Structures are given as C-alpha cells and as structure tokens.
Amino acid sequence: MNTVAFNAIPENTLVPFFWAEINSGGSPYEGQSKLVLAMQRTSAGTAPAGTLAGPIQSEREARALFGVGSMAVAAYKIARRNAGLAPIWMLPLADPAGNAAHGTITVNTAPGAANVGVLDICGKRMTFQIGASDAVADIATKIAATVNAAEVPVTAAAATAVVTITARHVGEIGNAILIRVPADEPNGLVGHVTVVAMAGGTGIPDLAAALANLGDDEADFLAAPYTDATSLNTVRGFLDDAAGRWSPYQQLYGHYFSAGFGTLSALVALGDGRNDQHVSIMGSQASPTPPWEWAAALGAVAQAHLTDAPELSRPLQTLKLLGVRPPADRALWWDKPDRQALYQDGISGYTVTVDGQVQIDRVVTTYQEGALGSPDATFRNVETMAQLVFFTRYVRAGVSAKHGRQALADENPAGVAQITTPRDIKATLIHLYEELVGLGVVEKADLFARFVTVVRDPNNADRVNAYLPVDVVNQLRVFAANVTAFLEYREV
Image (cartoon, rainbow, N blue to C red; front, side, top):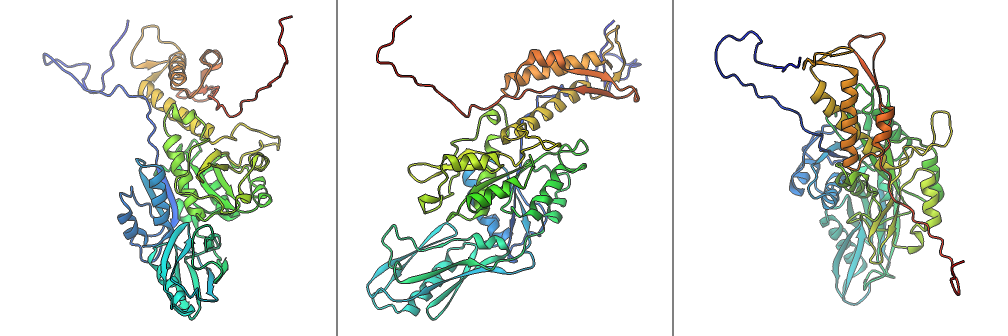
C-alpha cells in the first residue's frame, strides 16, 4: 500500500473539503560562488579591517571603502575586468607592523628640449610634459606630481633631483612593485634618470584574524598576494584543518589563489615546499603588474569558469588574465621546460600571446604527494577541486530534497512515503550521478552503480553510511602525434 506524505495537513482532518499545502520538491544544485579578495586597505578607507564587505558595486564604492590608491581598489578593478558579472566581495586587511618599501628616481640631467616623460609604475603608464627649459628639479617635481595623481599604491616626494617612491602599504609585498622608465617608446626620461628598485618593505598582514571573521560566509574563491610560509600555513589551517572549511563539520569549501614573483629555481623551491590541494600560485619572474593584481585576476577568471557545470570541467588553459602584463624582458617569459618544472613542483604558469597578453597555460595546486610521501596526482588540477565541490553540493541538495525528512527502515514493503531505506537512498545516488554525467562533471555511471555502497551504521540505528566512488571528467591537455613520413605508401 502506497501512502502520501504531508507536512502541514493533519491526518485526522474532519473539516471538508479541499485542502492543499504547498511544498518545494527541491531543485538541482546550481553553482553560485563568491569571489573574496583579501587585500590591504589604507587608513582612509571606511571599511573596518578584517570585516567582509560586499558585494562591491563599483570602483567608486571601492575607493570610499578601501582608500584611494589602495591595493584593494586596484585588485577590485582588475577582478571586475576579468569577471564582469561575478559578485566580488572584499576582505580588507590592515597594514602589518613593519616598513613600507621605497625606491628612487634620480634625475641626473635635463633633456634640454621639449619632450614627453613616460613612467610605468604598478603596471600603470603615466605621462607628463617636459619643457625645453626644465631643470632637473623641475622634472623631479613633475614626476612626483604625476605619480601622486595616478592613484596607484605608491606615493612620491621630490627633493631637488631625487624622487622617492614609497608604497602606500606597509609590508614586504611592496618590494614587488616595479618602477620602469620604458625605453621602447619615445620617452624624454631615457638616458636622463637612474632608478633604484623598490626595497625595504617588511611585515606580513594577519590573515588568521581576517579569515576567522568570515564565520560561515561562503568564500569559494579567495584571492590574495601573500605566498610567505606564515600566510600559506594560515590558509592551510583555515581550509584543511580537522574543523576547516573542507571538513565534514563545515562543508564550506574554498580555494586560495595567489601569485609569486621570483626566478625559476626560487618558485620551484616555493612549490616543492608546499603540499596543499587548496592553494594555487601563479608564478612569474617579474611583471609591471603587481602580484595583488595577478592574484585578483586569476581568482576572477577561476570564479567565472569553475563555478557551474559543464564549464568547470574544461581546462583553464588559453584563458586570458586581462590587464595583467608579462615581464618586459622576453627572456624572462616561461618556455616549455620552465613550465614543465613549475607544474611538477606545484606552481602554475602562463604563456604570452603575440600581442603581449598573458594567458593561462595551466593552473595546478601545490598538492604533489599522499600521506605516506608517495607521488599523487589526484588533486593536482584545480578543475578537479571545483568538480568535487560541485559534485558534493549537488548530491547534498538531491539527497536532502528526497530524504531530508523521512523515517529509516531496512525494508519498506508497503511503500510508505514517510519511510526510506538504504536501497532507496542508493537509487537516489545513482540517479544523481547519472544527472552529473549529463552535466559533464563525472563519467562511468555504470561503474558507479556497481560499486556505490549504502548501508545502515551498525552502531547508530539513525545513521546511513555511503561509499561514493567518483570518476571526474578529465581535461584534454596534451595531444601527441607520431607523424611518420613515407616517400610512397603502399598497402602490404
């Protein structure tokens, strides 16, 4: 005998006639992820440090919340460029204790003729007019005024012929800011100035306190420019500890996207020293674009493409990081042996198009070996992590909708709607898996149906245990062809 289950209509209703209750039959899980940029704000910003803010609607709002010329504003702008429709949230960070990085531009001689001065700082091209009668002090004053008007994460002060460039933010991250006097275009400064690179920045923002303030707010895509051991260990604990976001206690998940500058050997050493499937670091030898913009752009592209199926199963390769610039020196671009070395040691890499745009070659996690130290490629690809999150949430939504309020029995011969059995739950799981095959997230539904296991717990009569063998869809990354030449091909 089959029955109909009601949530609101009592079984003993005597009043006639028509009664109807409206319930949700549930809907399939739909990816709706949040991009959170953890970036430093200036003291002029009104947003409290360590408190999640957003979604940010415009650059104007970002400037008010995080301070004009701040790292946070720059990160928001490039993230919006790479993920136009994404909800972008900010986790503003206070500057740490320490020193701000600084560098200098010394005007050695005046050109003596009218020209245009061109600077490239924090990836932004700045120009000003050089007069024919300008002395070195005049040019230095114009340089400082031009930099200060550009609203980038540095300030400038001129003293006679020397312009001191100072990062707006305290911290060692400021040492990555590049000061360039481009020589590949008409530039009245070329041959007349000396640049001393940014250095002296010390201190690391406290990620632990800020991340803890997220509470149970979702942050599937978390981007920040910090790749020091302290910050990466903090992120690892936040995501992967026994009570972290990937634990069964929270089921909030999340992935950390960052960027690091350094030589090939330095980046390989960085990746080789980590083993975390929840972290991806894009490596570059140098760049006019500062690392916080690299991290924000990478996080935005990931959010745009790794949120929903079937797109999340496609490789990120060839997707452009809009607004991000490669090293000015082509000798510093990664070649194939370089990228092979990076990927083997858990660092992501890029290529450069003929028109100078940076595009993703491969995004890997820093995960490289299993618990016993043996090589393990299971969680190498960031796409795999996105697929597992989507799979888990999809199954959770489906099982909750079907069995969220049912009694449990070994058998249900009368077909009572209020009762479920391990066999019923197994059938639900097989059906959900088949749907996910249709969405391009997993494959081999027949094998899943054969090996999926659903049993009642032997020690807890109210609990069901399930084993779900998931075979995620892979990405086509390598096409290898053996091209054999014949002067004349004959059928034998």
